Image 1 (cartoon, one colour):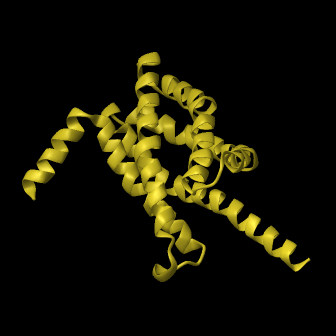
Image 2: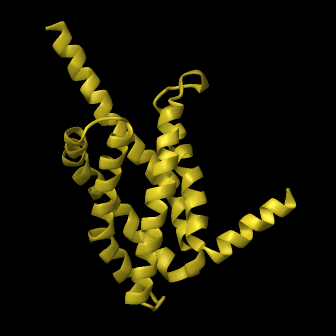
Length: 190
């Protein structure tokens, strides 16, 4: 067991993106389960496939794109002072943030087996209101990240902060599903 663990540690040191992929691959489904628990589900009726989709999305989409963004921002603004960190955080909120949210709503809808039209609708109905909340949270988190956290630990730091954020994303994504189910129930009664 120690040999396996040491090989994983060596791999994450050599390929830092893997550290983020492991973090997001565990944290995002955990957030999904937390959101389901808050919504009243229990161990007997958790949607484990939904948690798996969150794991796949967090591991293979969010972590690599966030890693790329952090690397690019470190090249464009190499400093770690407060002014540079605030600049990175604000630029991220207006560049990476909208793309990440659109990708989330589009990708998760497709992973649920729904079509492109429904995925586009998810972006149109949820992205802006979600982005507004993110605009209040992420500039502060990322300023701390860029100013005080060593570069090799920035993706894992953000992934821990993402635990709460992903609970919110899961809520926003589920809210749309619950709204459609309510509309369907109303239309069947009429």
